[in-house]
Amino acid sequence: MTMLFTIGYGCAIAFVLWQTRMGALHAGDVAMVVLLIPQLDRTASGLATSTRQMARMLDTVAGLRWLRRYAEEHSWPSGRTPAPTRLRDGIRLRSVSFGYPGSSGQAVSDLNLFLPAGSTVAIIGDNGAGKSTLAKLLLLYDPTHGVVEIDGIDLHELDPRSWHERTSAGFQDFVKYEFTAQETIGIGDLARMNDPESLRAATRRGGATDVLAELPAGSATQLGRRFAGGVDLSGGQWQRLALARAFMRPRPLLLVLDEPTAALDPEAEHALFERFAAASSRTTRHNGGITVLVSHRFSTVRMADLIVVMEAGRVIEVGTHDELLASGGLYHELFNLQARAYM
Image (cartoon, rainbow, N blue to C red; front, top):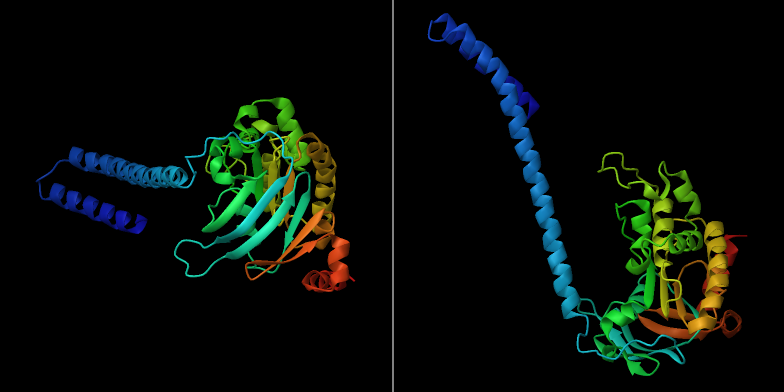
């Protein structure tokens, strides 16, 4: 485009000079052309930039409208029973299956599983085994078949807003919210977004204290290179902020951590979950909350109270670390494979 403009600009000047030599134009006309054409170029460039920005805004609005429509269609609005403030029994899945729209098969099939109140549950399996789908069935997805029960109550009978307010999650495919660092963490619980103590606690539990300390304006730093003065972060730093966001709710009934530390090294992940396990034990005594952890790292998985092993969309083993090792099944095989890799 710059080359075309330069050629056109040169041709226009040559034409005006020729017309001046022929007596059809005056020297002032030449000056006017020399001054006006660059201004016209800047105006056209500004208009093109504004058009692109408007197109992006329309795309964003269209996505937001789709999300609101999707949420309305999948939020079981008929539920009126308030979600419990304490889990006394646990969460049970009865013959639960789920298939993604547009897919002919089932991502998970005939899941029958009980997650006891106050427990930490780890889900493991190969890629494509259905681990993330199972985790999201507890939070977001509506089963194609079967029932998810909370303390014996069908999840569809609970008020969706009250249930979502008692859950929290951190995912591997986290969103990089380009707000201030404080807002990026605080949106994990809008009611406490401006509470300094809640923000500090969440930042500490998510291992993001050092991230904020390195930012030029601390928690007030604008994130994202698209903004004037905005700061970009490494993958690991973004992930720590996402973890802190998941910990904004101090005592959720259900906390799902789906590969939330994939960008961290094994030592950092283990230290993080040791800190989290200590805080989680206090939470479970308070309200019987359940933590669901999806991870490929067995040094973390073995800390769980209950381990769920999945293969091809089905639960094939359930037990403690010692029980599954003694059984000689898939968990025993995977654990020893990973152990040998670190020798």
